[in-house]
Structure formats: structure tokens, C-alpha cells
Length: 303
Image (cartoon, rainbow, N blue to C red; front, side, top):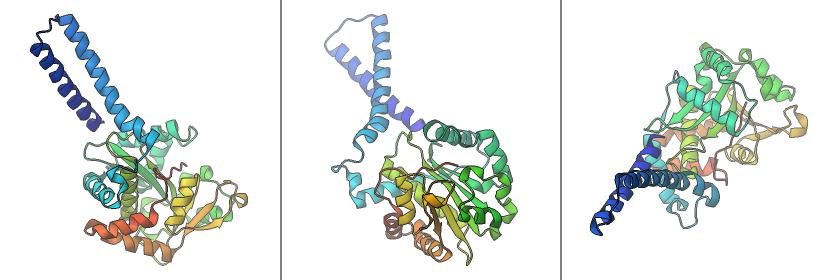
């Protein structure tokens, strides 16, 4: 939001300066009411121009073939710059958590868990929700990863448990994170309203931060694996590209979505590719090529 305001103000200042210069240069007579009305009109037009540039055009045309972001080298540079500014939000940042919940309820699933109930879940285990923000504290995206009890994981793998039936008691407390075997990826959600980053850049930054989080919070272990339902076609591509195997077809689960599993060996491989992130641009590109689906937005799932 701060980036959006800065850009709109820059457009406003430049346009107003031009208008005033034209007025003085051509000796145009205008009273204060006219100037006030013109200033308000310029402000509205500048805000509309920034909104169209940052929100509407990317949705209509997507990344252009002529855009420098279509080139992998330029995209890598853009991702690197954005990644340098990206960071994890504080675990106790309730404003970001509430914004993320409202975003999902407004754009994806009106019936998803409420912010108040999810706050209780996060008190049970703060690592289940992680938000990624930029230097202006604007939400880039977030992900939800649940370290499940063995019983809850078995219920999912049997096809008898749906995502909506997961309860707080199915999630290990924070003290059990180190011993967690089954990690359920409930969502990887990119903020479609981010005012600065193009969808391709925001998506790659979110995915890279997602893997960074997994390495730090739940490093590979001989018996640690990941589970995820593919709720969308994009999610299905993303999971397959990341090495997940389809273990249940939609017809074999009460969820009616395919269930995917990333086995311990494949999980270690994915994290092994990602370990050089912080200092090796080539490693970043390798991982991005591996996990990137052929879509313009990250997979969206909700619990």
C-alpha cells in the first residue's frame, strides 16, 4: 500500500507541476475554485492510473512476450531484487494475519476458518501460518503448513478425512515441531492486490520463501514427508513439478480433490536444491525452474 501511495503521489506531483507550468507559460487565467477542482481531478486520475497499471493491466494482458520479465535472466534479476526486500512477517503481527484471512475469505473461500478461530490455532502452534511481506510491510503472500499427528495424517492418507475436518487437536503443539513426521501444506497464496510486484515475480519470491521456511523450521528427516490436496489446476501442476506423487485420486477421497505426497527422499532433494539460495543465483534459478508451474500465479488452496 505504501508503494502504491508513493507512486500515485509521484504521478500527481509531476502532473500538477506540468499543469501549473502550462498555466503560467500561456498566462491562463484561473481562479482558486477552478484550481482546487483541477487539483482534485488530477489526484483522482493519478490514483486511477496507478491502479490500472499495477492491478488491471497484469490481469488482462499478463506478462507480455515483449516484457523484460519474460526473459529468464531479467526475471531472475527482478526476483533477486524483490527477494532482497522480502522478509517473514512477525509471528505476532495480527494485522497481517487478519488481512490474509480476509483476503482468502473475499477472493477464494467464504467458508474458510475465521480469523478469530485461526488465531487460537496459531497460539497452539505459531509456525502453522507464515506471511511474507516487502520492505513497505505490504503482504506478498502467505502459506499454512500444519505438522500433523500420526493419526490425522493416516486419516488423510486413507481418504476418510477432508481438509475442513482438520481440527486444532490434529496439529502438533509447538513443542512437537522437531519430531513432526507429516507436514500438511494447507495453502500457498499470493496476494493478487500487491501494488508493485508483477505476478511472476511475486509468485517466485513466495515459493522461494516457502522453501526457505521449510528448511529452517522443518528440515528434511528420514521419516518426514509433505501432504497436500490440489484444489486447482495450477496447484496440481505446482505439486507435480515439485516432485509430489499423486497417492489418492479425487474419487478415492471424501475431499474430492487429488491428494499428493512428497516422500522423505524427494523432500530432501528439494531442500538440497534450495540450500544455496542465499548466495547462489544459479541455484535459485534451478529451483525456480523445478517448482514453477506454467501459470502466472501461485497455487491457491484454502483450509
